[in-house]
Amino acid sequence: MLKRPVRGQKKRKEVHKKLKPSNMACGSSEKSSPDWFDALAKKIASNLDSRPSKGLDSFKCVFKMSRRTFEYICSLAREHMAVKTHFAFSNGKPMSLYDQVALALNRLSSGRSLVSIGDAFGTSQSTVSQVTWRFVEAIEMNGHQHIRWPSTENELMDIKSQFEQIQGLPNCCGAIDTTHIVILLSTSKRRTDVWLDSKENYSMPLQAIVGPNLKFLDIFSGLPGMLNESSLLPYSSFYDKCQKGERLNGKKIKLSQQAELQEYVVGDSAYPLLPWLLTPYQGNDLSQTKVDFNKHHLATRVVAQRALARLKDVWKMIDGVVCRPDKHKLPSFIFVCCILHNIVIDMEDEVLEELPLYHCHDPGYGQDFCDSADVTASVSRDNLALYLSERNHP
Image 1 (cartoon, rainbow, N blue to C red):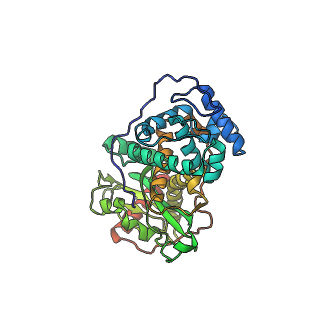
Image 2 (image 1 turned 90 degrees about the vertical axis):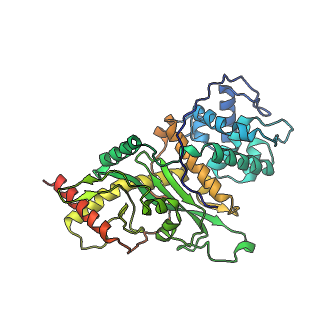
Image 3 (image 1 turned 135 degrees about the horizontal axis):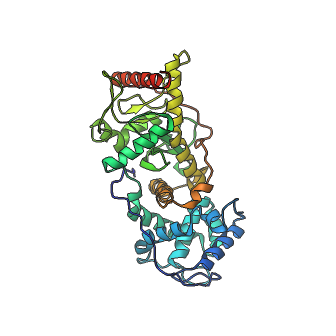
């Protein structure tokens, strides 16, 4: 199952329903209250031996989001999760929507086993599995609009402006990077090496194009780990659209009287150099102009590294090793974790100020190199490097 870029208008829905108190001891009512939030967070933190981080209350520490964002996510999941199946705690008390969403979010964010989550919530591992999958279906269906390529010129201009403020790269529309979701396959399923990557891990790569605010603009996953960055790229619809001139086809800017620069994204040396994908110069014997370009380039594309590192740090189910996953469902779990990452940003959640920024999202994986270089792209990169040099050293 391949995840394709999604189009649609971003909607920030607020949940304005008045919440009523509930008894958390054996589950909650369909509506909730501040007491419910606190009791739930403390209960989970106690059972999972989780301690509040500095600056975060127990709820934000457990769920990595504010209560306002939690309620918005509940509004996205409500309709789908209310259909057909009714879940209950081990004592027979029915689970409310809030209970189910809390369980699913904790499963995705903690990365704990089904048994551990079940013990924390007072339910079976089977219920944990079913509730989590029902939640993933709901968010995949009703939250996909939070991951989309900018649909208006003003949105794209804003992204370009923010990128240029980072390190001066003009007309840049995104940063691309790939991370590996490492998986542990059962012995009976290890019949092929197609899932083995360059580090001899079974994995599923996730390719992401990231905006200056660490928001995912486009993601692609679902293929086996044998594909590195350069070989994975052509399978994505992002590549297909760019090659056909359907994306990154906006207004060119003048770097000089003779040179123009089209819209592009930046990526590391593992990617091919293309007119719409600018990579750094390779080699040790580089001119000062090229060295300076590489510094600007690295400082710009670091947003993709930070976004993927935060994704894995917050949504730990896809960090570390995913134990015996259903490879047909795993892309949906990855997709939903990316949606949730974006929702926290779209909601301008105050928890963002407390989340750390890391760069490393693929520990143990070294830098790959791709020698493929388009001639036109090489000229564009040279022109941009010269432009930056002249501007910084007039």
